Image (cartoon, rainbow, N blue to C red; front, side, top):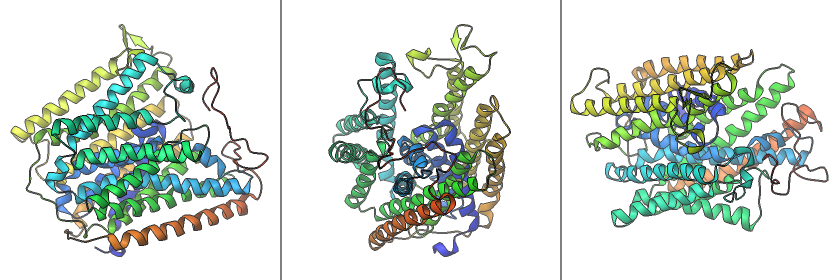
Length: 534
């Protein structure tokens, strides 16, 4: 398939899926929130790809897509958005350049995650599940232990002895240790554990060199996880070179540069909309626009890959626990870590809802400081048991509820996750609803309806596609060169557009941030003890 003949249904579904997920991500935030659109977009891409062999692996694409897109959620970008509103011209250019960089890093890691299942053999893919499970267990123990010993407060996190430029260095270290433990039990490194080690070591390499050696700080005193993400992207490219995964490397760069355009263009469109004088929640409009553009870029990037990725082994079977693990992570684990925040919002905003009733907290987060297990956890434990029980039974004797075809299974998984996300997001917003929320939650619901129609009817009109062997080596350098040209071009054009719209005035819709010059208000020192973290 040539990118010029991409089915519009796939492009639209991928764009709207990331649009819906990105709008919801903004309400929950960080890595967990960013994983939601990653899982949804990966399934959208697969279900309307026309590739039957990809349908067989749809839940694995969803899992790897969620993981890949989650990493970008660690990066701080609100001050960068503020820089693009600045009255200081150099600061504006700096803001748009860094918006492109953040969008590149976010989408590059997400694109790499989605591309991996498309280029790995059955045996290679099977090597990843134990390391992934080990890292998840390690991060869970990290959260429990840190909460038990330090009981950190989010706005005073700079007072913690683990504070290091407000980054996730502990999580990166835990991932490395988890992979080494798996390698020890397996008797050596393999493709699964090696990727975790590459990314973990790459994270530290990027952070130590860029921030600690060269003192490059994007938005002080906000988190410098961007530097760790730079290291991870470089590590993934090195991993692809070692294991001859040129297609994954191409997807990483192509999706990344498309994401850079999407992230910075979404902010420019917000500035144009604000200039009209109309009043609404333009920040949420920006986020959903960025998500839509992310999805378009992802679809276009994979348009070059659809018929150039190898044919996957449809008849090969994975152990049942791997099948269940992937679905459980996408439907249960991913939704729980996000929606427990919604339960906390209910407690804060609904006067008739106490923090505890019958002696049990509403939500406990499985943390000592919050009461370990609350009503929310009890219900989610029940849902999790029902999910595992149902799937386990299905493998012994198929049940009518689950479709027999892999396309039908993928459609069911997509629709359940989509409406689970939309309904819970609406319930979280409902307790503090206002007319402006119609622009956000209303748009999300309408887009979800369109996604439902597209995912149900789209596969019937998509031409069947097949795989082939193709080396992307010659494309990788070209993509990198043209990507740099686009980075420079968009930074100059978008910065000039801000000047055309607002001159040297500060654009409304964001706090005043000036990064350089005599009027710079960028903090230079670590936040003081007793004060909230900026």
